[in-house]
Length: 306
Ligand code: CP
Image 1 (cartoon, rainbow, N blue to C red):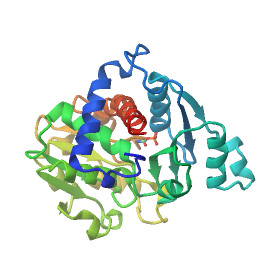
Image 2 (cartoon, rainbow, N blue to C red):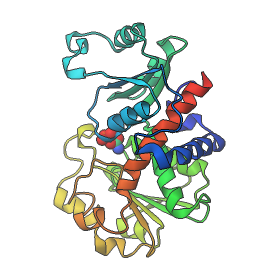
Image 3 (tube, rainbow, N blue to C red):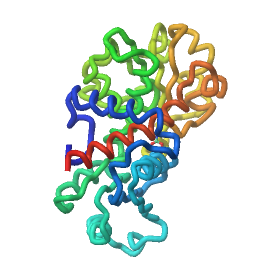
Image 4 (cartoon, rainbow, N blue to C red):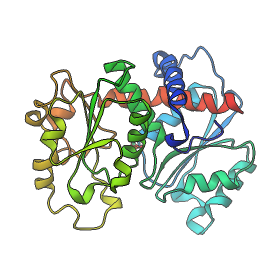
């Protein structure tokens, strides 16, 4: 694995290997005391052109836990504001010793484009590009399901509800769930927020949220990506919450031991109620914690493969 651009590039064994590595880091990921620091002497650059709390912070923590020097590129005060191209920004930071670049960008395919022009020794991690992919979120979501439901996904029913059309998280989750042979993958969204049918192969498309949630083991809800959608796709947030929001009443249709996931940031009262987000079935904070371990695993694997 030279770069991590998309989970589409990884077979099941590759995904399971990264999840195994992340499991190994999980116990110590949140503590400052690391038994090993395989990134000592390496420089990781966080190159974020879109806002982030979870992904940027957890990559910084993960890299520091592993002994790396971390450079957080500040887009607002950078020469990108003066018209410097993305490739020139990369070359500039490579020239300062940057080796592993964690890149988030609003445009689909940007990180794959950088992989074509970067130096041989550079490693790239896609931290979310447009609607396309968010592979480390996909991995941390799979790790979270595995912790609660076991390694065998073949008996699981996973419901993904909400703005699937604009969600890079949903695309990465769908690839991972298919690769792990998940028993049933249900997708439910207002028609305007469903992706093309070609992206939903192997999924059961449900007409409403209740049928998606009924009997599910995992209920995954998604943020309305208002920054990526044309005006008017969602007429009213109140109606959206009524029809598609995860409330205690709707969640009661799922299996009693169902877990609720959300990649964050949440729009409370739009796609999820406070009572569910903060309730006993929510694993949303576990997802965040697992993000550090998964990102440690990915950074370590990229360095090991160099
Ligand atoms: N899930 C996720 O990507 O969150 P951030 O935008 O805060 O990184």
